[in-house]
View (cartoon, rainbow, N blue to C red):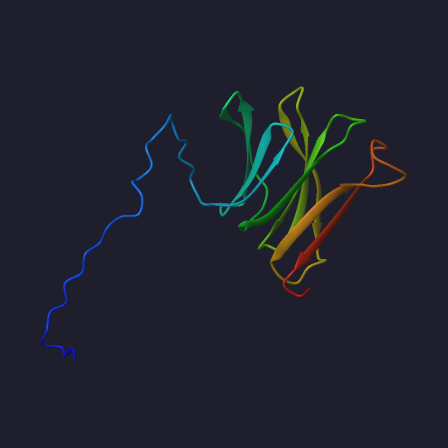
Length: 151
């Protein structure tokens, strides 16, 4: 048997080699909490309450808009492009118990505040979804649903 008086020798063999660095990597000021990809654009929500966009150019992602959306970490994101207006709506939910929607105009490269929804959740919002609504896709109407820790 073994006792505390005996030494045990272990051998470690790595299963994989470390990844090779390819290209440049952008350093972000805080953790990425959530991501969504829609129409060549990556939407990310950070622990700093900031929405960041990255646009696809070939095999690379180029940094785009950056906007402070919440006072707490962003926990969920959903996006929907409206075929009628050409705008992409982005909804985010946060630990600050608010939902915020922004409208992205790809022609101008601008992300602007659309609406702030507060008072409906008593806890951190953990899920949000946008979907085309109304009588059918392309009619300019959207539906948003969200959930928190209360259920």
